[in-house]
Length: 104
Image (cartoon, rainbow, N blue to C red; front, side, top):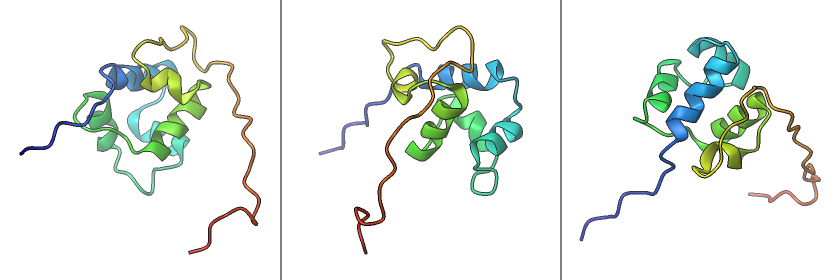
């Protein structure tokens, strides 16, 4: 029995390209802006934008923050990105206290 392919958003690659071009960034500049220039080769951005690979969740989170949108706006095919980026969403989450962090 083969594994079923993992479900993935059909418009993800298009939205990632839209974010980068709307911010006026090259692929290496985007990686620097996201804070992953030391961890990811800039050619991976091309793979993300062509739909050949999906970025890890921490990378998607930084895309959302750079674009000023919710992650949901990026991964939900039913939602469009704002016509003007960056958007107006500012992350307001609650930081975990050191007591609530898991110890390994």
